[in-house]
Amino acid sequence: MENKSINKVLQGTVANKGIAFGKICFLKRSKKGLEKSFVQNTNAECDRFEKARLHAISQLAALYEASIEKLGEQNAVVFQIHQMMLDDPDYASSINKVITEEHTNAEYAVTKVAHRFEKQFLEMDNDYMRGRAADVIDISRRINEILMMHSGKLKSKSIDIKNDGPVIIAADDLVPSETVQLDQSTVTGIITTGGSNRSHTAIFARTMGIPTIVCLGDVLSKEYEGLPAIVDGNSGTVYINPDEKTVTRFKEIKRTDDTQQAHLEEFRGKKTFTRNGRKINLYANSGSLADIDLIKASDAEGIGLFRSEYIYMQSQDYPTEEEQFDIYKSVLEGMGDKKVIIRTLDIGADKTAEYFMLKPEDNPAMGIRAIRLCLQNRALFKTQLRALYRASMFGNLSIMVPMITSVEEVVETKRIIEEIKVELKDQELAFKDDVELGIMIETPAAALISDELATHVDFFSIGTNDLTQFTLAADRQNADLGKYLNPYHHAVVRLIDTTVKNGHAAGIWVGICGELASDEKFLGKLIQLGVDEMSVVPSSVLTLRAKIASLG
Ligand code: PEP
Ligand code: MG
Image (cartoon, rainbow, N blue to C red):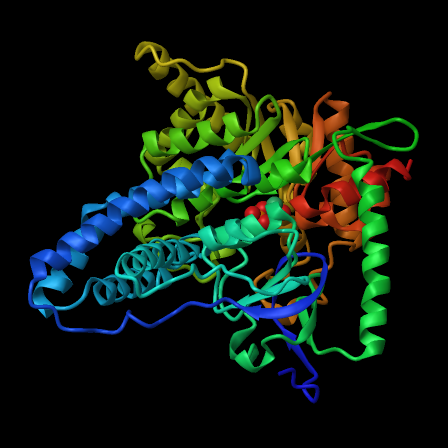
């Protein structure tokens, strides 16, 4: 029965933009049968679990095949990863141990182990690994569903939407295999109490074009079941049982959004040109291999900044040459013949990993970081450069080096590159000889000597996030300094201008990959300053391409 007196506004985190209307429908997940019960014959219970585990693996093989078309190979691959997780001896033996030691039913053992693994993932110190917690819950729910189906305790699956109108699915969190099963003709939106906007679920929702808001917290109450709602994926707001005025307002916003989107779609698959015909290379920034589908869906013409330090931050120890090679190769293959600019390790300051055991510094942002750390630690730098050069065979790679302040650093980097090339040749390992080498201009020093630097490299990419902090002496990590951290400040603009002019005078191209590149308000100025390339957040690509076409 609808409760007409409820009228609530909830605030969460945007996982996918867009406006959705529909009735709230909570995902039904039966907890019956999951509670602990005593079993006498633990061997038979372990067999029950084993049968369900094998059944789950074969279901996932079918789901992988079925998802390739819906989500693309890069996303569907999560169901292969799920198969591997189910094959992990640690996972199966932990469950068998609980069954045997506690004389308990398989469903309880599966749930207990799932929560233990989930906790371990959630305690990890980066978003990507925390996002994996959903995967362990996903495979465990699948096994439990199979166990309960086999024993007749469960008649229907959790995704069983009775409602025939447009539906907004509500849940604590959705797991990837639940998301992929959603019928886009019925499900208009997703809202969750938990989750993360970097999880596979969020990536799937984006690929499937379903407006999604996560992290709403416990205010997303079961009493909202069946109530009409609006999901405003532009601001992260959910309106429960909205009044007529709000409905009318959002219908208007959706109409405008749809018209704008249709207009933007006209720019899909096209190159980016200013009104007077100047070509701009419009690329996207990426943090990990998991972003590739998002970037492809954004229609970016390449990757202008791949932050390789995330590979190190997601690792428990120094990633090996082979591990890095595999990732770079997959990124390059994933992007086909499009340009991929991978930035060498920019660890230090706010980006750290424990195993680096960096010495505490009073001012780490101006300390031993990025290229300074790499030049002090040759073996570390060489491992990355070897992996990059070997991967260069599989796509259109450019390499760029962060935090440059002097010509000597560039010369030294090039010397190390020559060394690894000789080594790779001796070892008969293939690489491309002509990989473009660029540097980031993100210190005032680099901008001021960009005329000298330009004669040593193939391109510049201006990192306005750091360039702004160092030019204005305003720590980008300090929220109280917002008003000082002004990228429009004439000092920053002059340094950009100097860099572009010096780059062009030496015949090299100049790009920009800091947040300022995605700022529509500054776009006209950037075009006027003459930048050749912009690397932006993926969701802004079509908007910026359309805007550039009107500027000249
Ligand atoms: C920059 O400093 O502008 C930049 C792109 O690098 P990061 O934000 O990763 O420091
Ligand atoms: Mg930077």
